[in-house]
Image (cartoon, rainbow, N blue to C red; front, side):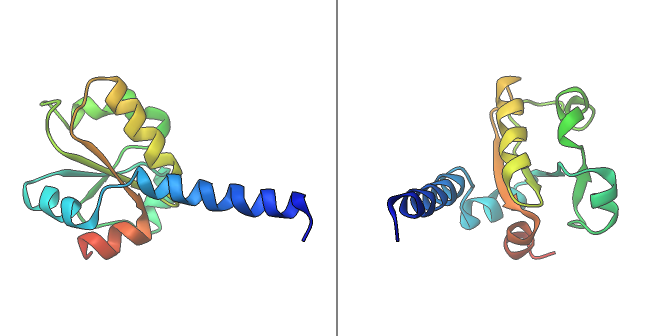
Length: 119
């Protein structure tokens, strides 16, 4: 392997490690769900219609900043966000934190969310 291939492999590994570091632990997520956390699917309405967690509401990433207040009155309420891969949910978490929501957690992908929440 040449040095370019090694750099690409290392970058991919670093990307996935950093992505995992930004996600809520399964135990913490289950605790938050039990405490009444709002679960938000930030995918498009079409993706949501193709399948989602039964307890989730759909607030697409491109409108989450404008529409979250219709679902959350207390900025300290726990919120769990997920998407297809975990990337959009990471952005949603950043947007909501920037608006002062303190209890936002990234569940990651819908597949990870299903395995944690059990829906």
